[in-house]
Length: 121
Image 1 (cartoon, rainbow, N blue to C red):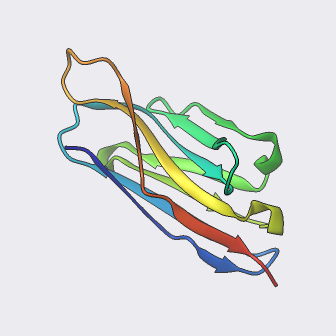
Image 2: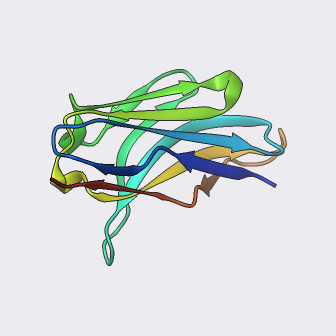
């Protein structure tokens, strides 16, 4: 069974920083990509940033230059460093891992439980 455990959310003032972490555990053969998405109530989940096992990254335009995604492949962990936070960054942030459990399996998406980030004076 695969688990993704997120940490690092919370309340921060505008202009502040937070660092999110997400660790994948369980029976995992390989992880192709890990990433962060965010969602407001009643809205669709949107991509924030994504990183592949080779280190290729892509970001939403709204966070470029402020957020940095990184990954520790040995620990199956992905990080999101969020700087210069704005009130419009207030969302529940979800971790995603695209992985396979056995070498013969196709890649499947697994989600974390979500962590709240609130940016407010």
